[in-house]
Length: 188
Image 1: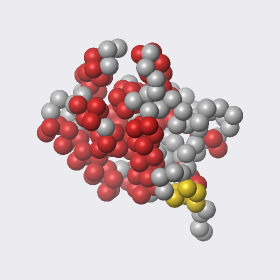
Image 2: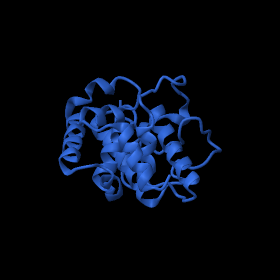
Image 3: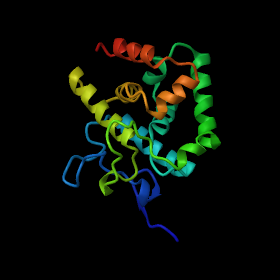
């Protein structure tokens, strides 16, 4: 069965991974890219393509982390050393070529709230949608809108059950220490 496709401004993607409002947002709520810097909108679009290419059901925080590390120098700067960053990227590459196969059949969910299955959340894991909302909230607290890549990284790291945190831990990155470095770099 073939699926219809649409153009999202960065390429053609099937409907399951088109830009969707974040979890809990209805059709009359803000655009999912609203409140995000142009660079972060690009990261989100690249994560969407990565999820599609990997055959994943939803965009999750590991997709977002991988794309942030590849494209955002400010995000890379909060990591301690080159070897640790290289190891982290290595884990993310492994994930995209098979390490994450166990994730393809499930939804990334923190367990804090019931999994959102509404049509307006299609394409995003509940944790990834929450991280985007968290990034916007961090930018507002800082008095600096729109949200940047470090805001998204901090929001993902703050969720202990995220796939991004799982990958960070496997690469030997302490999520709590990373969050402290991000906050120090952003004057929070």
